Image (tube, rainbow, N blue to C red; front, side):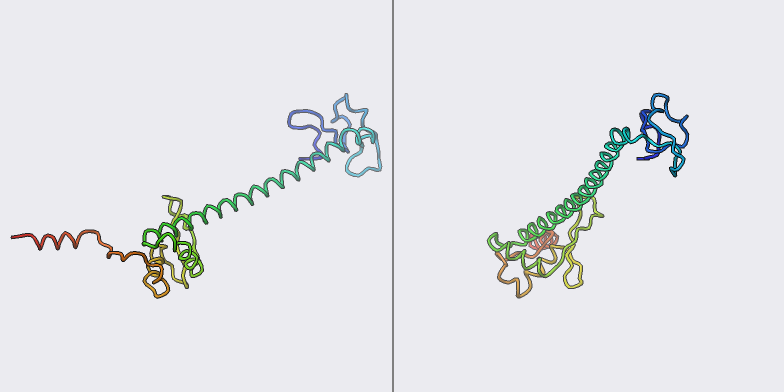
Length: 187
């Protein structure tokens, strides 16, 4: 807000503290100003009665509103950052949980496995992938890996032996199974 402007955007008179030219002031408000040759920044000064009654409360309210607006903007930015961080953490947690479940870790041991994996690695959400809200990447000892790969490596290690569920079959896309069944057919 320009405190030296004579009129608001809606055309109402602002009654600034000082004006250079009395002709700029509407005739209805000219008696509010007194000529003062000692005043720097303006030759006409708003009368103390009008200053205390009209302009000063207005300026104090504007200062309060500007501060409140700045506080709201700062709070909004803080809330946006916190919400974004919460979404990232939810994405990490759900990816860890689903990777552990897919790997066959029993439900009773899942929290322990997730706690160990969280201590061993840091997780980041790469939001460059639009589909699904981003991809979770695990950083374990300077090596980037998918969360699924991290869980598999953990289960294959001695430390993860206690978390293995039922013996998992080797991953297969059905190609070799089809070849074997083709070989077994009678010719």
